Length: 313
Image (tube, rainbow, N blue to C red; front, side, top):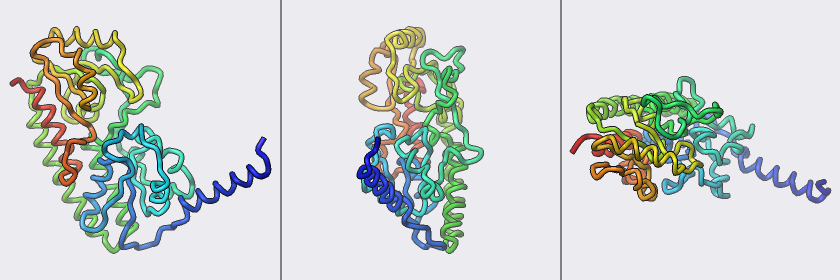
């Protein structure tokens, strides 16, 4: 049972949290929007649309995975002061789920994965993909692959929605947002054409240490043999490691894709043959110089790293 004093404390804490999160109302026709984003790819996309006017703030450091993130008091203040909060959604950045669902905050939130037309893919079952066709995780229909920023189609839909929201909040600069949108869409279309050419067939067979690139694969016709892990909180079993290693043993020049250097060391047993190659392909692009980090440079960077491994030397 909560005592009277404890109940008062709970109410005070709730009141202060409400002030922090909801006490800074939007001002119509703002000329300097305060925009907060969750992860680097989202910040980069918003920055494309806001170029020359605002610089969005990112909550989650690039060196940290979204699932390891915990809110700090400074993050709470930033969210409370934001005119617009742009995030992927609860599947990708779960630490923000409860806060951004609050009524006083929700009106300032743009959940990208909830925008109409966005493609969300289910987590795939780890192991060898039957007939090279991956299957969804059984018994987990709610489990969504969180790497939705790797879909050019999603980026296009998000950019249009972000421009619309920013134009509504800052009507004075609506034409500039729309011009930035048009330029971004042209760069994205060109990047898609270039990547499709770069990842031309024939390509070497490949397996994934962690299933991080499903959206990118769908966009550019790549089909992996299988993956050791899929969900972010899972670890690969010895049985799956052996099955993937045996599959690679029969594939000359096969490639193993891993998302980080530590996982590259863990993936060493998958190199079943002397000619099995390994490539580190970070879906967040942590190895891209901050000055060059944009949604299209991220896609191009991933394509270049994959192509170096998937094309025969």
